[in-house]
Length: 361
Image 1: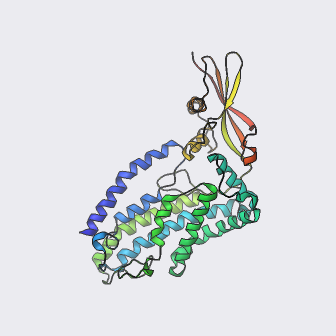
Image 2: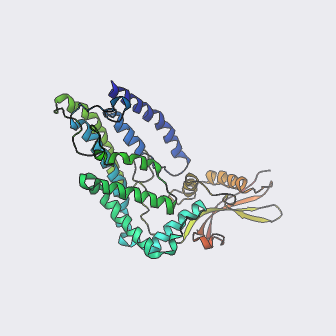
Image 3: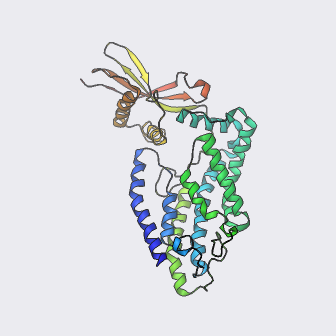
């Protein structure tokens, strides 16, 4: 009964959250939170209430180990593809050079520029440390899969993964808290002094012998997990990051420069007075808003959309506190902004006119 109640609760949570998270993907770039549904769906198809549910506390799991081991192993595989393919694309596109200090500093400067904030430590002033961290990321992403699949190195994988996410939060302002929470699946629970503590990815959880019925009960989780894993591998090979609910996670594979494209709006009044603004004058954009800017400006490869650019220009004017008089002309450019903190106030480079229209009287 406790297994069924846990499954029902997790299934309801997954199904109710799915449309809400799906709708948020239309706000701009894809938000890579799909792993929450991979894991929660797998829980709903597994005996997830046999150990940590309150009414299971202190009781020995009676199911065969197979019913627990398959879902947990699939969770480990999910982690593997999340990290593996971004690492693969870094190697294929940029190679070992991706970890060079100049490249890592440029990546950090982009995020600092987007958030209009500096970290507690200006690590960009220590090139050797940036180079060490960049090359460690290359090895970590490729090596996480084998580490998480072997019990003796699984704890090391968890420590490295948490350290990786702490670093990206501290120096890139990328928290990824939703993935941190999923690390419970690779924690060394077998070290706890408890009779029925779950040991991840392999050790026996139940003493019962496998039966035909137990194999059938493990089949839904195996089929679902296998399907998600197969599709994630396909998307990973393609490098398809702009998809949902199955996609390749952000690769950051290209070696970036010292500028970032953004939309620059010029408003010219009927008397010839001109003012330029971006909409960031009174505060930074969110990551979803940056994603939308990149999408409508053609950075992601699709042609700029005139209607979207028009809407963005009016919204940016309102956000920047710019009053648009009737008969004014608005011009929307894509320009390159310097990302080094010391150059944030410098005029943008290479403005390219994307759209022009008048404020209707």
